[in-house]
Image (cartoon, rainbow, N blue to C red; front, side, top):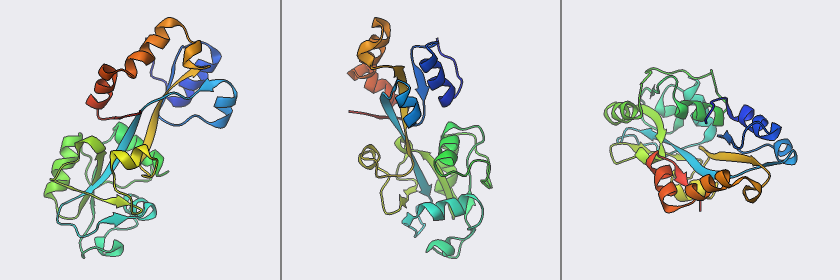
Length: 211
């Protein structure tokens, strides 16, 4: 039975003993670990920043990205590109948007020209709009857009797994104590997630598996 409460509430519930697993889209805090929560990372979410293919900019710093999305930087010439207005878009209510704004610490501070309602719409808009910038889950990036480096690091599965790329977060299924200490049904779920079938499911929803 799944309840959708948010990461902190999920971890609190597992520590209180009211649930078997507490799902979290962030790493566990030290105080949560010291209280007995085990951090079981089952997948990683990667977010790529994309621009239209003709854009000359290859690389942005994290600070430049923040400046673009908060509306301070409005022209590509300010970050080493052509004299061209920056067009920003993303849908409201998106999990990717929530993660992006949380990772950059800019929640409720973003200025969007277009509220696009799906990943496909973001890709199409960026691919066809000069000066456009957007962000999407890593798995959907193709040749129709240009994925930008962040602080010199390419958005690749390898760099995300190594922890070198800034826009990524772990998906944690926390337990009170190690998995081996859990009841049979809980252990069976973790066995499934680490199986070939479970990893295929994780990939099918656009996430990166952990080895």
